[in-house]
Image (cartoon, rainbow, N blue to C red):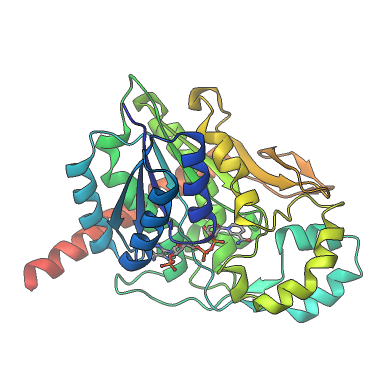
Amino acid sequence: MRKAVLVTGASSGVGLALCKRLLEEDHELHLCLACRNRSKAEAVRAALLASRPLAEVSIVQVDVSDLQSVFRASRELKQRFQRLDYVYLNAGIMPNPQLNIKALFSGLFSRKVIHMFSTAEGLLTQEDKITADGLQEVFETNVFGHFILIQELAPLLCHSDSPSQLIWTSSRNARKSNFCLEDIQHSRGQEPYSSSKYAVDLLSVAVNRNFNSRGLYSSVVCPGTMVTNMTCGILPPFVWTLLMPIIWLLRFFANAFTLTPYNGTEALVWLFHQKPESLNPLTKYLSATTGFGSNYVMTQKYPEEEILGNSIMDLDEDTAEKFYQSLLELEKHVRATIQKRNHQS
Ligand SMILES: NC(=O)c1ccc[n+]([C@@H]2O[C@H](COP(=O)([O-])OP(=O)(O)OC[C@H]3O[C@@H](n4cnc5c(N)ncnc54)[C@H](OP(=O)(O)O)[C@@H]3O)[C@@H](O)[C@H]2O)c1
């Protein structure tokens, strides 16, 4: 039996590099590209099949910031697949990022300089907006759309005889200080991206708690800092090129500068080979690259492990469960609203 893998956001960056690497690991995979833009997905499919003709590569069109699209895609997937062995929940946005120049300069001359560059803590704010579903766009794209997708796909994922794995692309920028249980969508703050990634970390812990007994396991990964469409929204590509010599130097002190999507997928590919039952549900997996360019995977356990002298995660299972319950409430509410809307039209 071919293993079946679904990857959201497979059209560029981490998602695209991941698809290429997974097919290098297993030439006979059934890889399903979950993308919002069909023509981009068709081009990726053709390129993947050109190098790996034995693979099966299919496409499902899904916009994770539009719940109707998530429901339609889930129905399609349930018709096409008996089970999914891996789901990479990778699609993500950081809209209109603004660099805080003042924080950058004060950080440059502080002891936290490497930590600041590794995590972008305090450096970036974003402008969020409301989607057609009435939700904050960053929250819906990075968290809630994916949450609904896994809720809908539960029949393909929950098999106690052989486990399935969810692998979320989170970030080192996930900060507890930017997340609040009373405002899970971060509608009142200026760092919705950081909040959404912290929410992903919480959700993964809650999924393990609620679904492990049904054969579904979840892990979170940070791919490191790479030059992709997302980071080219922060600084234009030519600035990244100008900064490269400094970043290569910094790599001798901070391993978070993976720089290319290929390097960034190290932890995502490593997890593909692990028995999910053997993984610690409270661990985050970080792709890392040395000053000499070798890739490896680092682990970061919650809540107390320190990286470069800074405790960068603080997560407890109680908050994770409360957040999960809030998501279930919100799910109930949006399903009722959508049903009412469909009924009226
Ligand atoms: N780049 C970094 O340094 C970095 C660091 C830490 C974490 N990450 C995370 O890595 C993941 C991938 O980002 P990337 O750096 O590879 O950036 P990217 O090249 O911009 O890729 C983002 C992917 O998500 C897709 N996407 C965005 N909104 C979507 C939606 N509403 N529905 C469906 N697909 C959607 C994009 O599709 P289109 O092609 O149609 O736009 C694209 O395929 C994200 O979760 C990001 O937060 C990135």
